[in-house]
Amino acid sequence: MKINSPLEAYKYLPQTNCQECGQPTCMAFASTLIDRSGKPADCPPLIKEKKYTKKLAELEKLLAPEIREVILGVGDRIAKVGGDDILYRHKLTFFNKTKMFFDVTDTMEEAALVERVLKIQNYRKFYVGRNLLLDGIAIRAVSNDPAKFAAAVKKVVATTELPVILCSFNPAVLKAGLEVAKDKNPLLYAANKDNWKEVGEMALEYKVPVVVSAFNDLDTLKSLAKTFADAGIKDIILDPGTYPSGKGLKESFTNFLKIRRAGIMGDTEIAYPIMAIPLTAWMSGISDHVSASFWETALASVFTIRYGDMMLLHSMEPYATMPLVHLAETIYTDPRSPVAVDSKMYKVGTPDENSPVLFTTNFALTYYTVESDLASNDINCWLLAVDTDGIGVEAAAAGGQLSADKVKDSFEKSGFDIHKDVTHNTVIIPGLAARLQGDLEDKLEAKVLVGPMDSGRLPGWFEKNWPSKK
Ligand code: SF4
Image 1: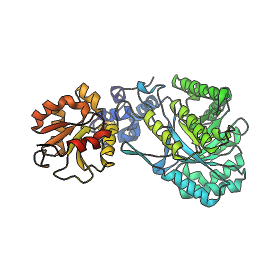
Image 2 (image 1 turned 90 degrees about the vertical axis):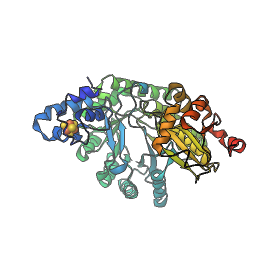
Image 3 (image 1 turned 180 degrees about the vertical axis):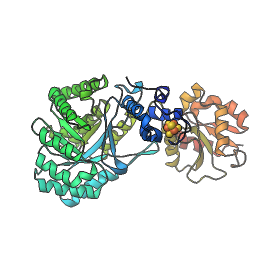
Image 4 (image 1 turned 120 degrees about the vertical axis):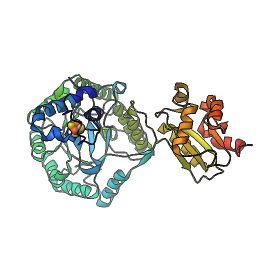
């Protein structure tokens, strides 16, 4: 039985409210355990005092996710893979967004290798206030030559802090790469029914995570995972095979569902993160580059939604990476807390005392859409993000999170005085919140203009309606 409320977690804590964990009370700390922003080891008395040893062990067991969480790499860019508790996001939230590793090979020229590694490392896509990134490098031993593979691994780990996957079914090649990257906590890909003994020994000796692989054979996959777990290897990732098309793809998809269902329902022998390999699109016989890229992205999208915890990819064209990073971000957004920006007054461009004043809600997607529509049209203005608990304009106006009182309150908290900081004493409100106009005029003692329903129409609206007529 797992615990899922702060009250249940609280029972296992020292209950002294000593604040050594940085929280005001043990109950507050218990809340961080449940939302996974904290871990039992963050409570010093629980770790240090012998009398709590048993409680600590019980608590860790009760808080452990159904699907094991595996950490790849070291440093700031570690990749946490797996760690989910549920099959459907609306039941709680998904943890640890699908991690995307892009391939390089040990036959690449050094300059091209470094260039691609840096391209993967430096990828950034700005989206609702955050940068979406790629997660790591998969080094494929195409040469099957230990020395060549070791040289490529050495170059990659010297170039980037990103986690790496060492890819070969040849234990001698894997070992050569591992020797070079052993301090970087690399992932070994992969142990199969032919090499499992050597690769398993390597994972144990070097204490690194490992993938077990059995193409479309769940019995062998489970048996390999169990053998490794019995031998003391904890950090296991499953590769059930990703067939790129047709009936085989349907089987691969079904395998992902079966594994995850079994893991969540309590079959601990297979409760590990799953790796998808959309890279197989390039081996499916599609001859032209764009079509292969497109199909790889389609496969990756399928397995982001069901239940690929990490994936190996090749195509780095913007039309391939952009939809993928957006999709993963969307699927893994926590439905319990909408993505919100700070509620305050923002400057768009270089506004002054004659510039218009607008407001929108602090739902990040709404805020950045409005901000971008204004900034890209060179409209200098003041833009207030009203605190609506991260809810968009229409829903917040209907649900009461966006009211005249809330807007007044947000103006006051922002320190912006509509009567003194601008000369026109006018506020422009979203068209979807038109019903607030009268109330707002009374509360703010200001002129209130109703803007367009869609912020994309703001430039045209300003041409007709601004400067506001006295
Ligand atoms: Fe409670 Fe532990 Fe935090 Fe102290 S450090 S307040 S005992 S949770």
